[in-house]
Image (spheres, rainbow, N blue to C red):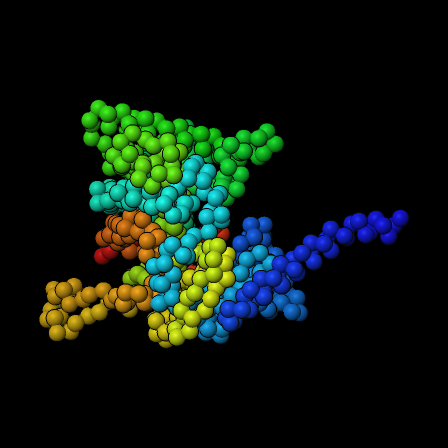
Length: 531
């Protein structure tokens, strides 16, 4: 009886192990045929359960006698930030992670990546991995083919110069509030929180036309007003993982934590506000009144103009967006634009405190793009060789490696050196006044650009100009009359404090939902007036 009980206990585990080994073998055989270097990993890189625990459990594996291996080097979120270009120096421009779930092609070749972006009909986004973003409706990030083209045509009209002007003015106002708060304190260690608040307020204004005064970390009320679109949006963006995992309708179950029920209420407020704005804008259109410049009203008007009465058939690539698709796109605009900008701002401001110039996005790209070969094998050229990739292979442009490889950036590729982007013509630099006229931005050749922080090709980020305008606006307002520097610890002088801060950023960058500082409270800064 005891032996039967043990058998029943371990039989499912044994069956699972056999199944995993079988899947790994099948994927290995497929990957081997490509002729590319292979790295065998025991767990799929996209496994949601593993992604939720990987950085917590791997330290224990590293303590084992065999702790240094491919599993502990590659099989966790954020490995590429620590590894940079080294794996590609060892294995070549492209190599494959072979896992029991999917095969993942890692590419660090500018020409090949440009080709993949250009062949958008062949190398598509894995929409099955992005279905979770349909929490409020289908959107630009979760569609492909004709549906994506319909979404793209309409949403592209919303990111225009009128909206950029709104982003610019709001960024100046929010940064002015932040510098006033920072300069009133002896030191600040709320960089990450304050950057998120600033980004949230800019997004709230640009997306919904709702402006709020900046509040620092110690000024913000600990009680959220879930009837407020700002507080509801903040709660949603701060808790995207449970929201996209469970969906808004499943957050109100009696057995779930109170915090998740509050998240449910925030989604109700968010949807109600969008519905109200949607109906008001439709009425304004029918009455011939001018609409606002925010993304929500622009999206409603663009969709209305496209369809001349909202279509009920989302399959029509010539029609406007449905009500649910407008809500879905508004969520994705906020989801994709908030944390990326906030985290980049945090990195940028820390690095500027170490020296007063800027090259943040090259070293700390906030988000990566995933492609797939889809249902058919695809051929790609890497340098002078052509490789055939099997169907259903995941493709990762290795941003961290591409943005730091000495082939493109020289021997100081890992250094934060903004001057690399400036070309100066000494012949034109007759005086200090002519300095700007003598300088031009360095640009890589088209089709061989290793700097792809906002993606490239048809799938380039529609909010690229939005984020750039916001970032520059913040820098202008923050550093026009002030400067920031790290607060020295113990016996440090200013230079030692700057070096410590640079080392901290290099070691502390990691992945949660996106790339960010893992312990931003350790960044202690001083904001002071220029003399």
